Image (cartoon, one colour):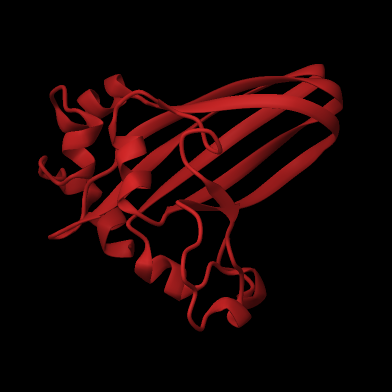
Length: 178
C-alpha cells in the first residue's frame, strides 16, 4: 500500500540508493499514558544482493494529553553504512539519538536526484485514531530468538546484515521483491 498512489510513493531513486531497509508494524494505545509495541525485519545490501532478514522488535512508552489507538506501518530506509551498523549491533537502536532521521521525500517530484541527507528516512502509514501531545521514547532491538528460529541456529544480526549467513530458502520471495 505504500506504492498505491504515485504522489505518496517512496521514490525509486531513494530505494535504489538504500543500503538497507527496515519494515515494521507498530501498535500504539493510550489514555494519558501510552504504550507501543511492534515487530518487523531489517535487510541490507551486500556484495551479493540483499541479505536475509534480521528480525527486530520495538517498544516504548509516553505520557501527556493523549487518547486513542492506532496501528502504523513503517518503512525505514537506511541510507548509509552507519545506519546499517546501528541495526547490526544486536542491541537497541534509538532513532534520533543513535542515528539521524528525517521524513523521506515522496512522489514523482522527488524522483529526480534524491541525495540522502540523513542516515535514515522514515515513511509511515497509520490506521486508527490517536490524538494529543505527549513526550515519548522508543527503542528498536534485535529479536535474537526469532533469528535463531528462522535460521535454525543462533546467528547475530551483524552476521545476517553483512551477508555472512546464507539466507534461508524462505527469504527468496522477499529478496526478489527488493
